[in-house]
Length: 133
Image (cartoon, rainbow, N blue to C red):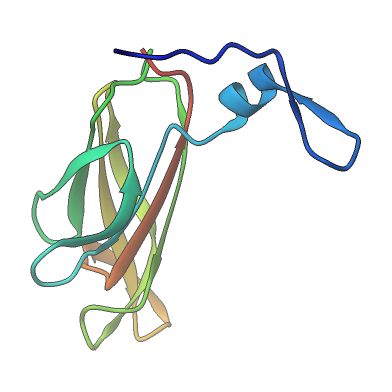
């Protein structure tokens, strides 16, 4: 038997009320932390069915529940280096879909010259904001 709770506000205990639409609309719809070097291993996540390795520096997040459209906002970052001569810089290529987000990471060589090739990173962190389908 399924249950349902219906409420339009949440009381915080400090005398302030928060609209439930604020909580629902302002909450991350997916997030994940995974090891991107060697064998992929998801550390923790929400609304993530899997992460796929799509090549050096390339990962695809596959959502458990799709988003309503591909106009959602995302924030990606990484931590650590996976190759001795490279430091992680930023996502330089991506493909957005309602059921997945594919991203590629680039680095800079020895902290001096921008690299033009993809590189793995020890940790990938991603947060997705948008509407669920």
